[in-house]
Image 1 (cartoon, rainbow, N blue to C red):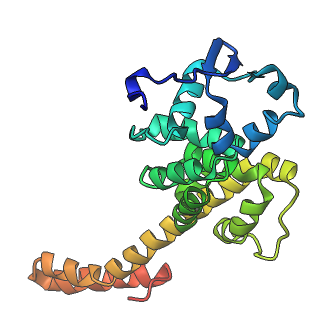
Image 2: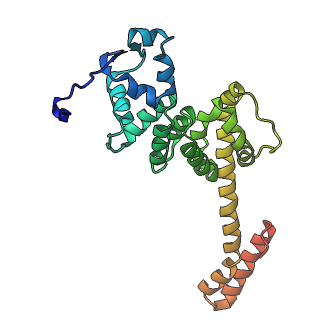
Image 3: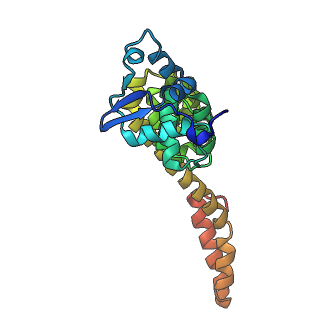
Amino acid sequence: MVDPPSKRARAGPDLKIILDDGELEVHALILELASPVFASMLSSDMKEGSENLVRLPGKIKTEFQTFYKALQLYSMEALTPSTALSLAKWADEYQVEALKSKCDDFLISKPVDAIALEHAVKHRLEKRTRQCLNVMKANIERHVDDLKVLTGSQEHLKEIWPVICSKAGFPKQITLPPSEHVDSMWSFVSAAISSRIKLQSKAERLEVLESEIQRWPGMLYDHMPTTNKADQKASDWLTQRLRSNGFAV
């Protein structure tokens, strides 16, 4: 006769995890099945496997617990912005691709900024990285300072470099410098783009003003009294003054 589930012997945790702020006991099989990195660490040829103990320096218990729980098949806990950021980091480091993809899908619904881009690039979140780059490329003027986080990633910086050069007024054929040079010159690039925006804004306002000036002589004519042809004289005087200053009236 088969014992009911409540009476069966249950295997307890068989692996100790040592973290910066304490230790936890877990089931090694869960980590091995989910992560190639842990599977390698726990192989019989490795010290961790023979000792049934894994040290994770630089890691804390709360983050590991969240990660471990997310690996378990029955876990239905929804992601939050905080846990998605943390789990994406763990999933990337320990090569848990399904979990990393889940975090990637979740994070693309969140706002784009420098922190989001840096996190996505660092932890190889393809969808989130592409989303951030597309948003920022579409509005370089607004995001030029955010894009500085790419100075350590030639792969992604190379993609937007021609757009940055164009917005700054540089020749597009300028070759992308080494990362360390780009980092040191970024403030200059940002200032160049900002100055160009201001010049373009002034040019646009001048264009509107020139169009408005065409109406001024007629408007002055309408506002002046007709006595002694004051209206016509005033209109002629303003027209002459504008023409002498280069305005086609």
